[in-house]
Length: 211
Image 1: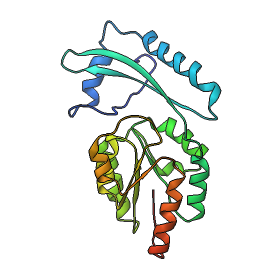
Image 2: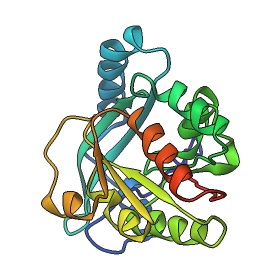
Image 3: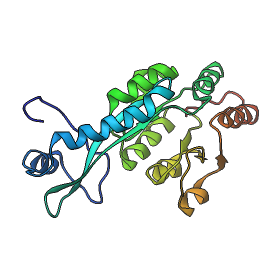
Image 4: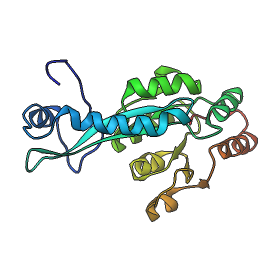
């Protein structure tokens, strides 16, 4: 990693951890090898790349800070839900500003944003739950109504900060009760956001809405 100047980010942790803390483990771990990570990348690429119009692949490691060891290497592949691009296009036609805040790396998100039609200056990568909440707070200073669409525990703080919280169940998996308690709307397809925004526009003429 040091030889090829490969940078890294911290997506989440059970406690506050610094870049130096992580670097000390990554650069001195003696058991894990780059091949461990490459194996996960190949597996995800073979399984997913042939079936998706665009896909973002993110790789990383789960570190044990107490033992100073790399316990797992992992790679995840993601692509927009069906109808996501059309939904973003329609929201822009309605005058709605759209943003992405994700724990994924910024460079990968920018390519996804290019596909969806979201400007790169409205994309926030390696965003922790606290950062997502701060982004929503900042947007509320600029826009009259801020919607937050999330689907997991990492989105909970931002959903609580938003004017309208939307919980998406389009991605399968269990969700904690707090997400449902916080959500003003629960959707199963991303295109349902359009109807919610149109309803806000009718009830609040002249409002500016970012998502």
